[in-house]
Picture 1 (spheres, protein in one colour):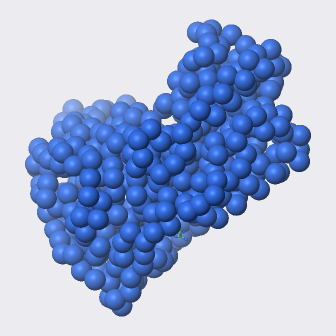
Picture 2 (cartoon, rainbow, N blue to C red):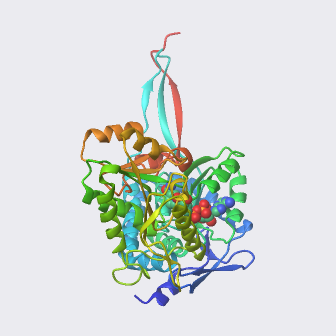
Picture 3 (cartoon, protein in one colour):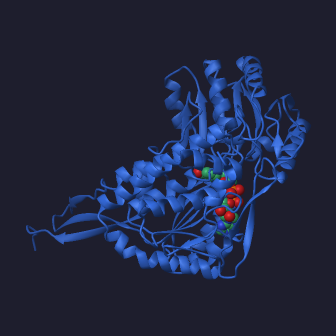
Length: 489
Ligand code: NAD
């Protein structure tokens, strides 16, 4: 793949009302490859004025898009799916050079991201309302699901394609128009995706993209404008909380997919080899930079030695390097400061009694590399127990009773993903009853799919993405009460 030629093809400007335009003040910003530190592109940076123009374009396009036949909307999304799949190698290479993930994982994300287009293209035609009668029989009711209105979609850098398609696809399927603000560290995948959707036939103004060095220059003016009716945000909990405060001014509908601190519980009766594979996948996927990453590995004391030894061996065999190289499984961290944070987390864990079983060190640059690391025996006061690690460090803690496992697992403000490994089928229901998390992987290190209702509780957010629930998030229910012809009185 000629990366230079590919990057040259990617639009670097804003897309507003069906036109690619420079930002109002002509400012630009650079995107770097985290594996090499090289600048790979220079993009237009949107201003407050550009953001409002994008909202205006979305508002102007909304009525016509809302009235477009569902079948037509479905066909456009399906065409987008076909084009993304055709361009899979291009999307995967763009993602690897701007975000760092291994090419095999980037290919997986293209498939996963594209699946949202396929899924919601199918859902477009299955948009059922309800009918019922009032118990006193004076009225009958009909409900209609209506598009919510222009949406602001804000996405993070760790999954540059899928975090956006799981918002854009249901929003468009339900008849909404959108303004997208991608993360400034990884905007190129989304720029290329918007170009692709333009080719798929999305009408002018239905999708708009405003990249910017200042996220607030996009979010603040749009959220303060009554034409915006919904914000869907994926990112960190503090930013999500700040947006929720802003959203209260205009009572905006909100979906928030925020941080996580997932427990992976390995019970004494688990298949240990299956657990090693599952926890490794749940922890090290995406360089550990995933909201669903297994953050705290809780292992029953009776199997802790065997599990730790096998797990540390499996992790130590992972190949680290530039994601474009053959066989690499763990790429660079997104920024140099993240390498420093990993060092601090390891030192802190060691200070509370943790022993490093493998890794534990930064790798000399260029690039922001850190060894895949396993630490055993840190205390519950360690930062790796309490904070979202967001990197390739896997801390193992032990428990002695089932009650202790649930208590340790729930001892976090977060509630997104959790994982349970046990060969006892009853444990599935006990896990469901006891775990305060939106997602449970049972004997599986993978939870994500376009068909599932993805989302968290507590500080991990509000609402669900994917499945039929993901589409409801972009609608409002309208009830029509009709006088019953047999009403008395
Ligand atoms: P972040 O909160 O720093 O940024 C996310 C997005 O918000 C970016 O586009 C950023 O430019 C924008 N942003 C930042 N400050 C803003 C502000 N004041 N107003 C408006 N927008 C603002 O998060 P990140 O570092 O890009 O992503 C990592 C975080 O995202 C982690 O906490 C991770 O768990 C979370 N995440 C959650 C999910 C999920 O589905 N729950 C998925 C992926 C990532």
